[in-house]
Length: 260
Image (cartoon, rainbow, N blue to C red; front, top):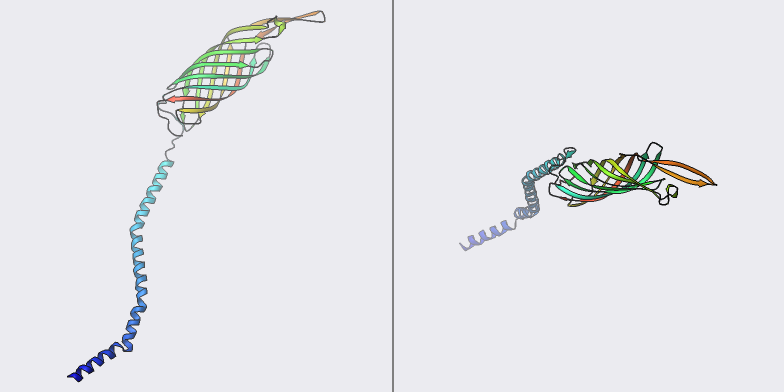
């Protein structure tokens, strides 16, 4: 019995150290990295299968959002519920004065102070010209319409009445020159854009300005040249047409100010 047990133990030891068993162990060690690679690959594929639909959904939502944002522009629209504002708008430009005698060019400067309620505006204006035989100073009031636009520039148009004074210090009209005053009708067609869409905003634009005197005057003049007296008269009054560049500001209250 002891001999049989010894033989069986030797046989098990020989099987443990046989080449076939050694080859099987080596094969298990050799293929273990391969199984790790397969496991990693399967895990990666599973992760992709889970995340790809979510990524596609998020990409689709981003594309739809971008498409909706691109479709928000609906053309040039009149701004709804514009509220009200107060503003000051200085301007400068060139003008021509046409009367029965001749046409003369002038440089002008001035300003507009306006109150806008909804689409209606009213206010006061001041205008001064340079000297070309005469100069004028004009002070008036106006009422009109102001149209604030979305995705475009704003427009304003107004009519008014003003007092226009023609001035000259030339002594041939007398010791103090002349100062002739009269009423005039005014018309303005302007366009502008608000640089900042906030409560306080700068405004840049331009305007066509037309003023017409309701009365005309003849101012006599007299001077002597080498013991010879020369006399005549200068017609005053007419129609002035000007193109001006405007740079001002306004303060807006209430209403919606959508981004442009």
